[in-house]
Image (cartoon, rainbow, N blue to C red; front, side, top):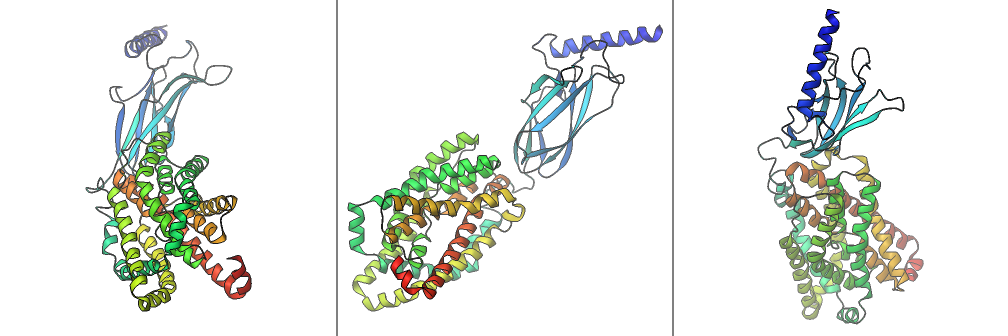
Length: 456
């Protein structure tokens, strides 16, 4: 009798405590972390730890499970890349309505991970019943290191890009190559494009409307994390890459059209990249303020326009030098493609160290889809074979460096590194796939010269 009396008093005191702490009625809270006064907790990057969740649900009076109430707690991280839940275990305290659970966690990249916590009543015959669900608690993973909050463009691997000796070796080749492309520009073709801008318009629609939508859809199907999804969308929202007219030359496209499309798409990107960033950032639930690098876009325009204009002037005034430049354009182009692959890998080696298979698989499909999209749209529009190839290349080859700049300027370093995996994967895939196409095209022309001539 004495033991029953003590147990009864203990139960009444605990019930009174529950009413006091949960508010008594249906508006009260049964589960909480700590004393319940804070909703956000901080952990450093790449560490293991525990959080303790207490439950004050007393269940049905008189029911017990080996002396304890039949209840359990489930916890899920809504941002698995930021925080992962390792295990949930009952602390094994004194039986009764007050229970505590130890949650093992592992932090990942910097960011904030909301938690979805459910308190389940197991006493019901129909199965577990959700008594309470909370999603107002979150874990903030803070970057480690003193300079980890700085953008990677200012510290870390990419800061060495401008000091890369390979870049200094390639710069003269790039300049001479662009001058040579200026010698390939045909004024008559330019005037024709003004009157019939269908190829340019098809390229703009593919680059800025269909490709971002494709990236968004693919990221959803592959269940990519938000940062990677946004990086992929921004990459597919970028204008045509500077190598587009290089590939057009090597694959039998229209060089004048390729240069025109690259210049126009770079101008249009100054308006379309912010619109695309805002729209898909909102759809993905990414609230970071995205910074579009207008200075870099302007620099890209000048870097293309100045040497090409110089090449056009050389073509008008110096026919001898023009012949020399045209003779150098193909070997220089091959060197630049191989050098671009090497530099892209060297720049992204640290970022791609922990890359996962889903983003690799997704990134590889982006250039292929763009090539097929551009070629199909140009074929439906009834364009000539060189124009079909050029539109295909301009839609399929994006200026991934602009997307990379957006990621690096918009996020803290750890998040920027993670999001930058997308433009790096797309850049490497695009360059590698185009190199294979070029080699295949060259082999085809060598083996079947008559068929290749007829096709073009």
